[in-house]
Length: 119
Figure (cartoon, rainbow, N blue to C red):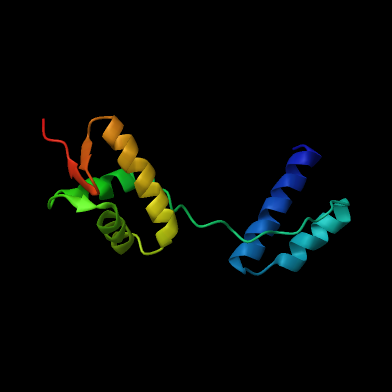
């Protein structure tokens, strides 16, 4: 195994231990120190997979199955189903998807109200 690979694996393990507040940090840092590898600061983890592929689109369609809704009503539905998603992120994502789905012919809007396009 290459030294570069070992160093990378140890740095990744160190990051995982710090972010997960796990045991063994002293051992990993001792190994890195013995190998002369600099240990950069570890930033907090990003939100854990708040964007599941196709999930937001499915939630928007689910919200509109009951009938036409405004953007805010759609976002409120999305947030109720995905409480870990901050409201402002859900709003921006829903806005982008509504327009994208509208261009694709899946949705239609009249004023502020969005509805599923009937074939």
